[in-house]
Image (tube, rainbow, N blue to C red; front, side, top):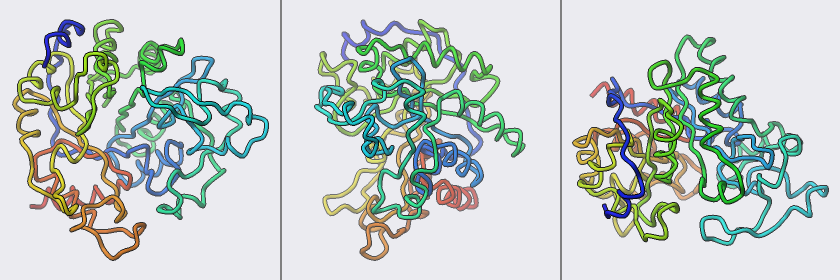
Length: 354
């Protein structure tokens, strides 16, 4: 890890490291393989299937409200393109250095956003989910926290929540402060790493540092990484995720994060023919640094599976997704982010029975 990164990020006190009895199953954007992602219906279904955590991605409206969308651009996940009253909101912006054209959530008030309806992002692959297009609102983060409490009561289980703050640098450049609002809401709902299963995640290190050092938030933090590129908040330094996930860097990062959320390829890369390769040392290196590892994203459709785990030629058909998840669980990971939580829960059951 470069000295310049360490200089920018003050160290913070470490929480007691989490220990899990069994690998966690996280409903990734809810049960997003079956319902339009980031809707209350998707979160409810994920919990109903048995997921331990729900995962809302957080962006902000122009009036400063945290809402659940995967990206600030909402053309793919809502019916905004079909709303003539918002046609003039279509624009091109630079999102983390990339030109993106569409409709952006920060250009809407919450009241305006609530008139839109969610739709399936991958209709060709998820035909069942697309039948629910137009039925669900875009929820606020506060609504999700209220839902978490209600689901915990109704199921008799303490449901965890692992929000991801999206594109924090971009939001700050727009005059918004997602970290402050996250801190306010989790404090309002009495959530911390001691009273409820709460993690907060980001692809940007500065976000995680600020939550702990500036906002004094008692939450566990997950640093999301990829097998390519680097965190946008450190882009001026040219810092890459590869540099930040070496054995030495993991030990340095453990002073202010509690775990990693790597892409699956960082745990088991794919061979040139698309088949699953051999595990890397990522899990062992992270565990040696006292950090958890919960990779993303497990999806059951052939389109997303290694070639040797596919069934047939239809990209939308489910392949050997249980076997794939089981292979990853055997590497010692601490949890999995799943679009189809029931598939990963079956894999976990098989893993625990080994």
